[in-house]
Image (cartoon, rainbow, N blue to C red; front, side, top):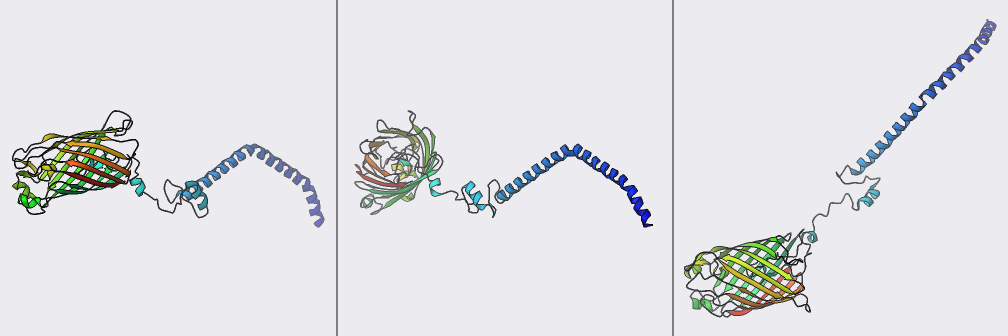
Length: 365
């Protein structure tokens, strides 16, 4: 029995060898046929895997802050080096130096007027207060003191400039009569108070550009006098009033010359200290304001000049006079300006020849 199985196996062995050889030959043929397709498939899979790894890396480094790379724990150092800032720290945001960059040229903010706006002592200029550029803001504060023959006036105020385009100002005047108050019948040392809020807009031009075109601005002021009983007694019609004006200011560096001319519509009596309108006139009429300054090249920061301002005649009781001053102003730096002047204000509340000294300190940025 065993012998028969052995003999049968020997007979089948050649047949099995031929079948195996034929199968291997077929596998070889199939491999050669599908080799290009398999290679292409391998390239596609490899590219897909590479793309998936790239997307995974990007998502892991940017998921916490949309639009900005943020490091994972394993790649924090590399991402921080690429972005230049720590992703987990809050943005510094606006700083004082960004809000008030102080980039404008020294002196282009002007001085501080009695009414709070930037300009000369008695005239409003087309300047925008503070030293902020077109991308930031500027601010200035001032204190002024005027000592006249029969009166004194103290003035405090602030001005803010926005993008070298718009100016907002405020000032308060403390006008004291001293012993003259008793002679006027209103009491020894009587004090008049005047609040003034203003806005100014630069229309075109710049005070320091290279063309002949001046800087031109329009402005408005609202004024409130807190002494209704007295100002009505002297013939004033209103305790509140408004001024509007247009100013043109130009600096000629080569000549060292500053020129300003302003036209104002007002009904203010002594710029509003004695109310607005009167028994003689209660209408708006244009008034002129002009400034002329010289900047000596041998003393940088110094301006010397003159100003002139015409006044309305609204009251019979106390006629007004035009104003005049001669001033010297020194810009120590952008944060400190000192102005001194001789002023001639004519008749105020029946007392003539009101002359004296004017001193003003201004700080800003």
